[in-house]
Length: 634
Image (tube, rainbow, N blue to C red):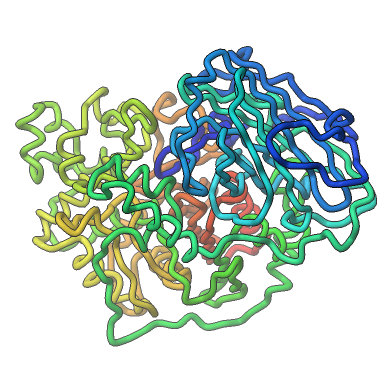
């Protein structure tokens, strides 16, 4: 799997095996596709005479279950366009047409059906693509692809499609208006596309063009096509990101069809994790205190933009226009705080200052901080405590649990099994299980000695949450509110999502819901080494221990570029990037691109919340680090 942490397996993959840290891109030739003088008939029959002049692509390769193999079934794709739309047709042969899966009836949730997807990077900037997907009966899904190829249903527009099952497979057609695509008008437009076909009964995805694991960024490997004569009137006036509340109502609309009190029911009803999931789960409120803290403002947005815009988000691709870049990458909030003053603060894609964003794995950094406070208060002796001191039922199940310490959990090196996808489904279990305490106590299995290697594992924060409950005698939310939320003057009430109304255990791996400006205050607490004004909220010793690097055995970290060549590290549910001659930068990071980035040497905090990553997870980190490099030492 790639090293970007996702919360659970998406309902469709589009090549998630692509490594986020691949480098050298494979150049794609540009193909001029055929232009027609009239719209094509979209009826799923492929009998419009204009298809005869369309450009044909058929050299598919498998992406799953293993990349690069010849497909088990033949697929052909036809492309044409007129001045208003791009037309796509598919001919899918199948040796067992009676086994074609086409049961979905709800838009944007293809479940386990066969499907076809046309993915288009209309701007050819590798910042993202849009996908248009149909099952064999024409039921539509649409959304966006991040730079690494991972999908999200955060886009919703009107386009035409038709599909039908035939004696030898199935056929489908699409007509996609240019007005729903973001591109800058030119007389000759270059776009990039990919087509994916999924055969459900074989769990097989085939792609054209072939996306090579070592071939560079996912979108950089798209087939380039050239179009000309598109009217200026067809240029989109906005970026059609779906309103998150609308997506919520689409999710709950499908809920009555499934039992959302079960793991499988939730997975089927709610699909992939999304930033609106705080609306799906019950939660514990986080109340504000009597005293609210407000950052001073000293806005200098042009200066911030001037430092970011020359930076490359992928090789040879510069940001150039910060506001467009943030919009295109599905950013929700972007805040830069320098010398304790806000110098940049903007919101995008229907988000505003008072919009709630769920933290995803940023919550882990809050959780580890609560462990530090509990140690300061003597409720936990120290991180060398065996976890069975607080969770003896684990030792009763397997004596080896007594060898795992709190520190091992915080370092993601407890030696516990974790396999994201089927058949183990640990991502789904730790995100959607309606009884997370039971899941943590019963699903955990020891596969290696503690401390032997790093493995990002969402059971670890669940176990930490149970330890906090038993050590403090309070819910984790109560402890967070008392020790952090109110003392540092959060402006807005927040919440911590729980697994279910029945069990009410915090989603320790992902569930703090707050506004971007309040996430920034947590960053300020750590920038100031645990001190808030004149009060030490958490010991400076803990802040250093939790965020600063230490030497690890050579084989401890996986062979990710971030760890091997970018001097990255991981501490107590914080990520870090080494600097010399002083404190290193560190950051909390969550799915969909939630970041609290702290650079002590530069007295800098950056908060980015996103609907999606937009670019790869560590590409954001590189941008933040390079921006900080341009600032003077404090």
